[in-house]
Length: 329
Image 1 (cartoon, rainbow, N blue to C red):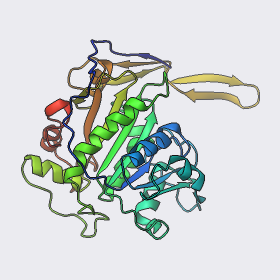
Image 2 (tube, helix red, strand yellow):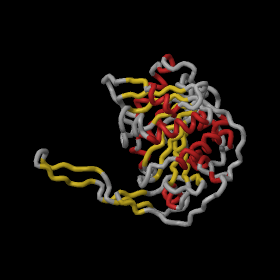
Image 3 (cartoon, one colour):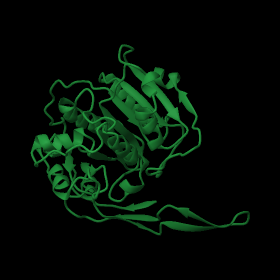
Image 4 (tube, helix red, strand yellow):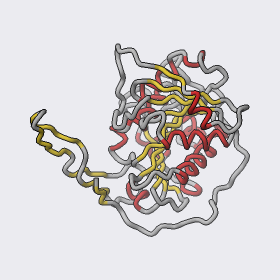
């Protein structure tokens, strides 16, 4: 695919400008849609484990890109533990790490991890945050509707777990090192206000009253309760900066191709010949086009659901603060 993207000045920081405090190494649930053996997932797990985070990895057995919120109903899914991958990732054996796969979709993986009794197979790891990724390729604009990576984070948030989706917004290379750093910065910003056990995990009381007002504490509660989640995209050449932005406008041209086949008759392949991102200020497409990592708060529920985030909450959550991160972090 040829991407008609945005070009702009890129600012590169020789030293990250973020104020680094001692932050708790919270337990994490890691998943993705590229599969359990993908370099983005394995590299991120190694990076986070080295920082002391206990990890429960639960990912699809094989690639499930663009699977959205697909669920596997009534069919048994093969479940497997990967001690070989865990051994490859492990930095310090004193920090818990378990790696599992499921022959299903990203959302299947999240449901099994959170509501399928997996805690009995991996005791001692009670995740406080779900991180989905790192996906190879952008998840910008309407991509969030199709993406298995974003959908896995959304599924976790529906179960009341704070969640973050992460994508490397390029297909030109698979060097995830800058994406690891960006993800670590966001997790460090989130960690101090997370509870050891998410306050609405499993939605035991059904619909709870949503936080009132637009204060920093109120917006944090929307995130803590899983009613909003974050979508992070990191450009292929990252200068170190962030922008908190809304979704942009991305257009897929010639998205299906007719492929004649003597054996199968007429077939079609989905995959745009070109992708056009509009240069609209304050959007994820524009941020990526100008070399910034984009952070976009998303509502977990449909807008007309009792827990759906109203427009004023999304707008307030998208207000940019210090270093380009959301003001409520």
